[in-house]
Every structure is written in C-alpha cells, then in structure tokens.
Image (cartoon, helix red, strand yellow):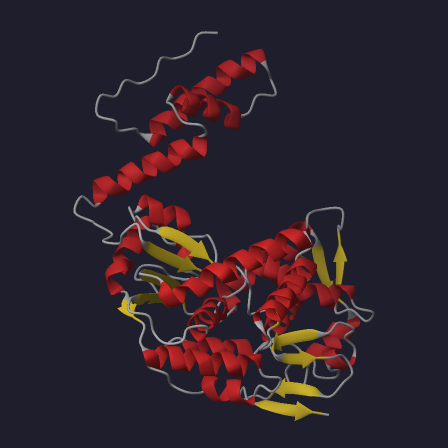
Length: 401
C-alpha cells in the first residue's frame, strides 16, 4: 500500500488540521484493505510516522507549540520545587502546556459528599475510603492506597518550599481549600492561592478545568499569599463542617470573610444540601425532580447536563458524584424516581417521577419520612424517619422532630 509521504518540516512546526486531513486520507486507504478500519487507527499511524506514541501525544505537542507561539514572553516563573495543588487532575495537562515547571499534586476526596467528621488521621482516612469505595463502586484496596497517598502528600504543605493552591468558588474546591489549610500549624512562608469565580468571556463558568492554558497563564499573576488569618478561618470552617450540628456552619455561611472571600457562598450552597423543612429534599434533589417534572421522562445524563448548564447556582458536582447522590431516590423502598433502560450505561437510562415524588414536590409529603438511606452533609447525619436538621426558607438550620 502506498502512503502519502510526510509533510516536510525544517522548523519543527506541525499543523494539526493538516495532520487530521492526512489521517482521513489514510483512512480511505486502510478501508480499501479492511472495511472495519477506524479513524483512530489512521490517526495512530500518522502520529507514529511523526515520532509520537499516540495521537493524543501528537495533539498535546502541537497545543504546546501553539501556546508558546502565542505567548513568546510568558514565563510561568514557578520552579521545579513548586508544587501545584488541585482537587482533581483537570488542569495537570494544561499547566504543562503553559510551561509550568513544578510538580502537580491533588486531593481527590469529594468532601462535599458523605460523612466528614473530626477524627484522628487514621480513622478519618478509613471513614472516607469506605464511603468513596461504596458510593462509586471502586476497589476498596485501591481507594485506601490513593487516599493515604494523597493525604500524606498534603501533610507536606507545612514544610514545603513553595506551594500554589488552584481553586474555584464552589463547595468541592472550597472544602478542599479548608481541609488543606486547617491541617497547617500556621501559614507557611510561601503558600499561595489562585481563586476564580468567573472568567471574562466565559458565559457559564463551571470550573478551572474548562479553561485553556492561555487562561491559566492569565490567572498566574493573580495569585496571593495565604496568611495566618486564612489558616485560622479555615480551622474554624473545618471544625464547623465536621460538627454534628450545622449551626456554626450556618453562622460562617451567612458571614463575610475577607481572608477567604469565596468561602461563605460555598458553605451556604453546601448547607442547602440539608433537607428542606417542608419537602425533605436537598437542593440538588429538588432541582433534579423539578426538571423531570417539566420535561417528563428524560435520560439521567441530560438531567445532570441541565443542572450544570442552567439550574445549579454554584456547580460543584462531577457526573459520577451526581449519579451517586441520586441513587437513593431510585433504590429506596419508596422511591421518588423510576429508572428504565437499565441495560444501558447510567447516563442513558431514563428517569421518571413516581407519585410519591409529585406529592413531595407539592409539599404534601416529606422525603425523609419515606427514605431508606442514611445521608450525611459534613458531620450532620440524616437518618430516615428520625428527628433531623432541616433548612428553612432563609437557609437557616432548624430541628425537625
């Protein structure tokens, strides 16, 4: 089979569109020999001819070259000893593309879900590992190893030469920030924070992970030093979040905290995961059920997409987290949702309301009087058919007997 020769390049520049065109042309040749040939196979061959192990590696190289061409004067000004911290791996690749030289670390523990109590380190890690492995159906041994590794690395913040925390304004990120700072004895000499709640030109800012490397480069000069006021505030917030009563958390959520300006709104949104006083639903549950009421039976994945695109006031959930949060509404003895097409992956399964769900939405029934799953918001445990904390219309906690 004859192949088109490689486009010659003496300056190292590669044009991705040209390589895509080459892959499509190659696909036609491959299909003449094997009708089941795919574009991915053609792209892999093109990448291999150019010296790359895979098409994604070729694309990453082109992206890095394009970034460098657009920012000839940009220097990330971090060093190899710098550690960039994030509550997930969503910016790791973009940091590399933008030329950041430091190492990347993350804490993936979703502290906005499941039990979060103030316990000795070993017991705390065991509690979180058990929750994560059960909620997301993950191998328990692997989860224990990952959680231990991440929290061990986090302890190094106390003595690190230079660390930078990359956060946005939602509960997932702010609870990661609070957890990181609450473990410090005092503010280290050079611990910096980059925060964002909106980005110019981005109509619906969900998170830092959606941003191009260019924008990470724009955010870099906006970092600021963490001081002792921020550390002390984080310690208060962490203690309040772990408490079995939400009263102290509500006090912080309704306050104003210049040391960590995005903390209060995030805590207030997290407080809204407590059951409503009348319907017993968290805000996530309520938004989901109302959407399904409006459109009728709808794929699971589309409910999540609607919340993230329009309805969620401060997006903090990933897709698997959303799936885990809604499972009790499906799997309970008196469910609020009926799930069909269960032979498909969960995003494509269709959700419809039960009669009980309509009663709950109409204010004629309280979900926690019918639920069969225990649920946690930080240190607050919500047990079915038991007295519990709830939230009134002013987002203030009240005790419901």
